[in-house]
Image 1 (spheres, rainbow, N blue to C red):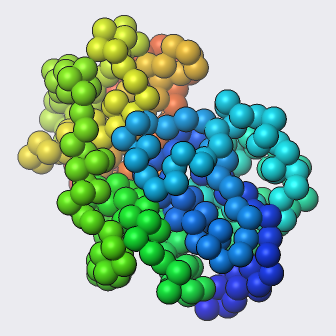
Image 2 (image 1 turned 90 degrees about the horizontal axis):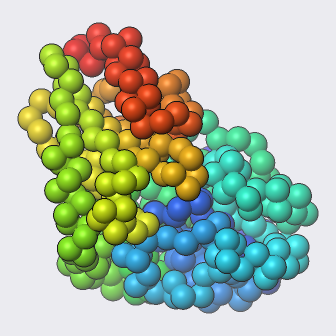
Length: 337
């Protein structure tokens, strides 16, 4: 099946095309890593390719090769619309529903370009003409590697390898999550052979805390609560607490994972107030068989993967916390199983 799918890619890319690449809003390492690596590959193989991100992203991702060439729709709307209008192909990476790109969605939906989805989340929608969707794979960067290696493995250079390594590393929790397989490590081996530097990449992503961010992490851990007689912990952060620590986009990235460091914990959650968007953002992480994708989908308008998901609440932080505790009460038998 994959072979036939890759033949479709080969056919559609057989002549020079104008191509747009779209990651999801608030792109993470996997979204940006997959987008930049694909963009570099396409431009090296005779196409005119451009990334348009729905909005900006954390500073700890701005060292990635060719990152400075990315257009941000939130700041460069006119130029972005022009490029979308003239595009032959539009790749969407690391999301499978146009709601994930918000204000950009109608322009992609109405475009006459052939739309191509590459994504590893569950329950894809059907907006694309070509779809490479596989929830069993741990990251979109793994999928992009499979595609590029099939199309022309010689073109994969140090810059492309660096971007792909970054996305796989961040989406696998530094290769700790259950979605990490022997195939993941085989790909990582090939990327290192192509010039990716593991220690340098890890340092640039994880060893770049500001004092404000480290103090915010301390506050988050201080706010952590454990639910009595259940393997569940959660963190709340109010807008006031964020402001007091000079919060910047990306500062809370990875905070939710600290809850799973506690012995015996199966579910960790963080709830973060965003007064500008008038929402509470939630992140869920689990160990074992507890499915946070279904939990997020059922109770918090979200989704993702079995062990990692996100959600939103339109209620206050206090009410969101109350709703979360009520939901946990309903499913507590699953958590104690």
